[in-house]
Length: 226
Image (cartoon, rainbow, N blue to C red; front, side, top):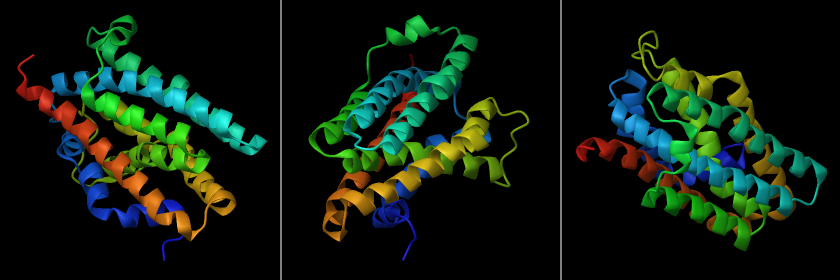
């Protein structure tokens, strides 16, 4: 049996996980062929997405009952506002889209669907429910970044998305992901039990599907002719 709750949940939805982590958008990021208009659209929506994920981490701090859990929530919040959003602003500034413009963007349906799903799980459930809904994003991006950086067919030298790949493959973000995996196990020990497994797997599966839909939103932008 896989050692961690995250691994067990990932095994429960192996097909959905593959569709997310091996999506055509991800493959095009890896080989540098993703149209820049698609990446630009993704970045603008991901900026809005991350604002709501920051809210989710604030909710996680509120739902926490121990100082360790509060510290973990603060670490995740810091990773979003101090690392990820900085990279998004830097990328978009290079392409003529500044932070004020991103803040003014309308939210895509896929952005609203995923972020509201995570927040609803956190409000209606407990800290474990919230972290399970967050995990496909937090840990999934680390897995995707590491896989792209290590893929033998990928050359980062001339890849316009090199900085994105290296951020998620880098030690800082990998540590954020490891911390999230450990937090899931701690919460399962305190708040879980096998009786919760089916419901947690349902949450994880839906969040993973919403992640894949977010990639598809970015990829489909090439067909709009905007």
